Image (cartoon, rainbow, N blue to C red; front, top):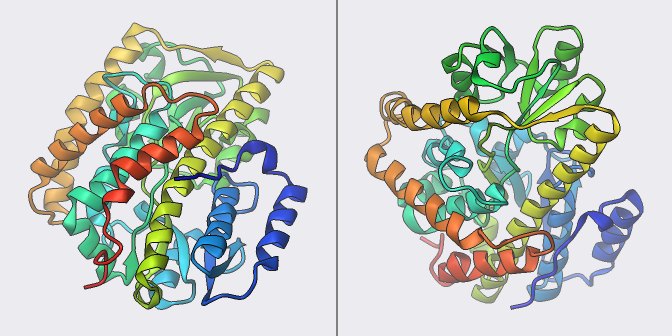
Length: 387
């Protein structure tokens, strides 16, 4: 299996224009795929999606085009794919807590990626665990995809969440009394469990909230130092807290009617391309992180490693929070067999930590091969999502 990996060097406006031009030059084939990305071209997922579209043009006769920030917003994408406004979409599952509650259970367990066994690329492990859970271990997840007229192909994951702050946070005691912008409920619970307070603020309002002292820290990947311009308002970064990643993503969810119209060879090509898409996205997020760290150092932001008290408090929180997550999904979302599902996903996270432990910089093709051999090659294109 050959994997074409898109790296940061290609993610420039000129390269993006060339990629789109090449895509447009592909001869007309059996279908035109409208691929919705409710984010700008500079976002980590854009170039991997362009490469995904190009691959399908050459291997499956599926001529496709990525529409960043023009066809559907992030919040609209799931409904747009369901209703056929887009053929394929980058779906953020936590935006739809009820419709995708099954896969969101796994997404809520993402802090397991950075506790316990430590690996160099937690996002690679989280994406692998999420894909294997959804495709091979969670028929309820696939039933919800079907109910939303979608077919799940591949996932992705961000890098770990860090503390980007206007004051130093180096110990568990430093969290007490602090105001933390939390983009997800588990991060809000982390802040409150350690004695801080959580502040809910949209991403586009976080910069102002930090500059005005409404929040002391945002919990975000390092890439947001550039993407959110937090490099201009942060004075300190803590690398090993709060941890966790964001794997609640359908990197290329297909409209089910479009999927049913594909022949078996085309479906097989889509699944194979999905492995490369997932790996490319993971590495694109990692490249954003590396650039964010360089920008922070150039700006004179102090880079901190949390001490043992912060590490221990975070480990304890993640362990205790499993019961909270289980209760929430059992009582609020009425999921069945929640404890067994948490146990399954937890085991998969440990498995994927082991599988990706040797994955390092420049190993995107090796990661794609792992995603293929361990997960997507085991999905039968003859029967998958055809019922």
